[in-house]
Length: 337
Image (cartoon, rainbow, N blue to C red; front, side):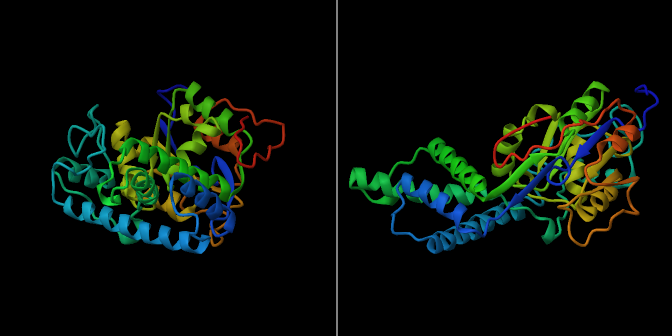
């Protein structure tokens, strides 16, 4: 299939349950104990219990979420901040940069981008970022250490912001690794992504996730260089199924929605969300799809049982062969195919 005859120019992928199989348990004591040890190493008082740390983290999340919400509210009518992360937008709301018409769904978001309005995000589609909560905990621990060294007050202690950010990312990753029971690539995932690139298709990740957990996992599993762009909900402040997350990915890649297909394992988030943005969907019913999801989605152009990439590749006109070797359980170590 040539570029002039193929149906799509780009493929958007969900991550967990689509390319990666993962099992986590954030309620177990192990991840909280690992986080506690990391914070004690930074200067937190050793007497803090796991229950006490859970309470501190919950409070930190509340405080930082409130700050993020205040920032979002203050920027709703600000042309300077509307879609501040967008790298590219069409030349007009009616046509793409090549003069081709856009869909009605995309035109609405593009018009909002061009005249400085931010779209209204439903409360259940707002995605707070957890990294500021980890920063707050790490800063508090480090302030105690600095105060002890200088005999000054914690409020007056000088803090290295770069060091705080580094410590926060390490703390988040420590927690994530300790909470992860299994993480593995589905067989053939890397081969699929490489095949799409070889065929000249753009490959974009559009994921509901916390970037402080997901970006290290992408690096660990060798996926980062296989995406042309990575769009993660916690970095955007909005999650699927809001079409806004898809609109941002489209705008940054300069893509028409009718030339893109979304591949995901969650009917509401991936299939209905992308459909609201004018994007076709391919539904993979995997073991970690939502329990109430159907075996096949009536709203998808293709439904598959499990991470079955061969029919997907056929739909896309891509030369692809499934690996014959069984998947490797990786724990929290990386791997590939």
